[in-house]
Length: 448
Image (tube, rainbow, N blue to C red; front, side):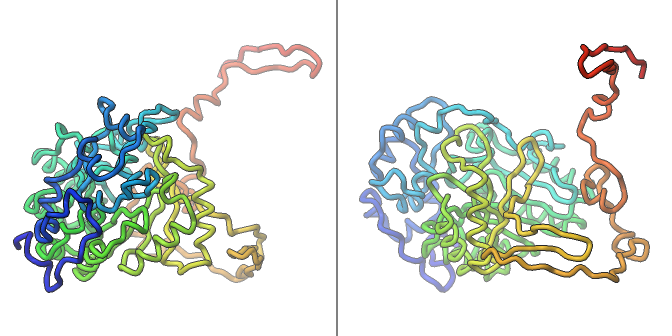
């Protein structure tokens, strides 16, 4: 479908108030996603035509080697031109704080490269993989976890990389769920994206395909009838969209999400907790309420990863717990995301939630609710444990060796989980003989 035609039977919604430089741009052109990508703002000179740059913003834009800046005209039109604390502006316009080093900043805080068996594929969890298919985005978040590669025009995944990724998935039968990310998969040429989805669907053991994207937020005009018709061929297909603030949910975004949902694609939202942007219980509550109105389920609230350039955007973990405390009981359960830390070093997502279990005995469990009301739940006295030997699902389950974790302990597959080097550390080569608590110890050599 031609990108300048109306989206389906609905005309494109009216755009927000545009800065003067785009007043003469026609609606058809403005709603052409290719025009939006071609006219992104990337320099101080271009941004100065839209916002009043602060000295800190000018310094960051002039710094050599700064993380890539590209902002679609649509998203730039949402920024407050006079307020440097604008939550839209702070997400995409760099400041001098981005140049400040801090401990423990790392380039690859999630250790994705270590979990990459072939280029661009991350296999961290037993039954699912992350397939990085591009390094390009519609716009670039200042807190990007993959800023070490994302946005670099000299780094791109090739057909050879895709073939290696698909081959690994095809010969790894425990992989049932594939997440396409990057970069942003929805910035790929349509034929390339369709080819990848078609190749994944041809692998029998791939049950679910997911797409992680921020295009509906940065470039909602990309979501058109042509794209949704292509995507709906590959069900079950899920999509996680990155929303951070209620101001992002405009009429254009509403229409984009409606089209995706009407195509049968379940939508979730992933939000990063960011200082000065959304670190407020009321902002997050407003965001999740707006999301469910457009059929997007709040999925994760992420603690900001400690990557380079994010020191000014990170919050204490206590702030995230405070936000969840303000949501639980105060809004619908399906509005409440799971607050997680993506554990540095490659530990994966760890849920961090307020404590509602107060104590327990062998007969009762004491719990508290969001108001502080304390109650007890009686434990059953005649419970008959599940028998794995009689369960067909237990008999056919094939967990990947080495990743059983705590579940394996509870299932009796192991009795301990020891940290690396535990046994070596405790093979003591010396022991200390205390002749008296008042005397200097004597070190005695001991053969182990």
